[in-house]
Image (tube, rainbow, N blue to C red; front, side, top):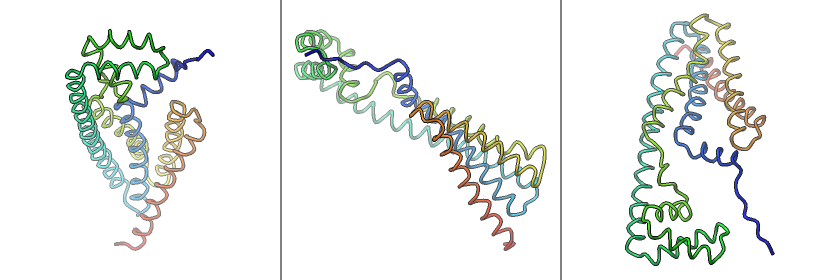
Length: 241
């Protein structure tokens, strides 16, 4: 019987690389969070009956505070993750170095799991085991599911998060620089809804492929958050606390 080994298509590989990229994840989270956070805050403040200048100041403050908060959070998260993985890899590297025969067997198991024949796996594992770096790279990918060369950059993720949050937060804020009142609120909601659909569609396209459902899901989340804060603002504005 002939066994067919499945090899992922180039498109699948690209999707996996984007999904595992810390900067890409930070960018998607950043622009989505910036959009939802600021449109919700702006509608809440406007719903409370605040003057347009107050709405603008609140939106700018939210943009700056949120962008830096996201950046700091991403940096700490990515740095902690990288240090944890580096520590694990260091321990495993030392184990492979001290127990070469165990290392060879582990490499052979990796190759066998990939569909390589026993004879080829034996020969290849013996050859790779002679090079500590190649041995560690193969072991990490096959056994630990980690690429030692792609642990992610904390600074890159932080900057990506900062910039994209700011962009997302600027979208609903922009109309308030050119208008005020109900007109600015409607325009802010409209362009935010379009942006939410675009973000959701893009996210769905690079993950599950179901871009319509992902777009509608993103729009629903935006509407839920914005609607809740608007009515809270209306209630508190009516109470005149």
